[in-house]
Amino acid sequence: MNGFDDVCLRYFLECQSQLFREDVAQTLEEAEEFLEDCMAVVCDSLQEVRDYLDESGADIVGMSLAEIGEASEVFSLPDGRYLVVEV
Image 1 (cartoon, rainbow, N blue to C red):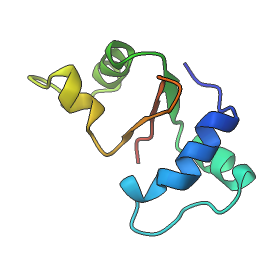
Image 2 (image 1 turned 30 degrees about the vertical axis):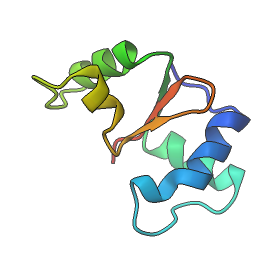
Image 3 (image 1 turned 135 degrees about the vertical axis):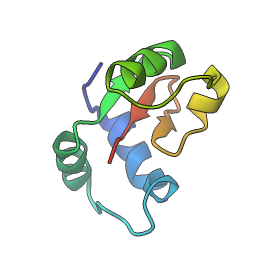
């Protein structure tokens, strides 16, 4: 988990409206700083996302992996990983 590479940062910049009404970052550097500040994580699978959310106390009881993948705080990266941004 963790590690904000170019794929992750660029995707977050392009898709941040999935979670926020207004942009929270304009540049790759701002995106990285924002993700670090909110302690976002990068997971390799939806099962890893489920485990992370469960450990962090999120209410995911009864949610399928598909439902977790559709949550606004879960960004499905183009390379198959997932970025979880909890605000």
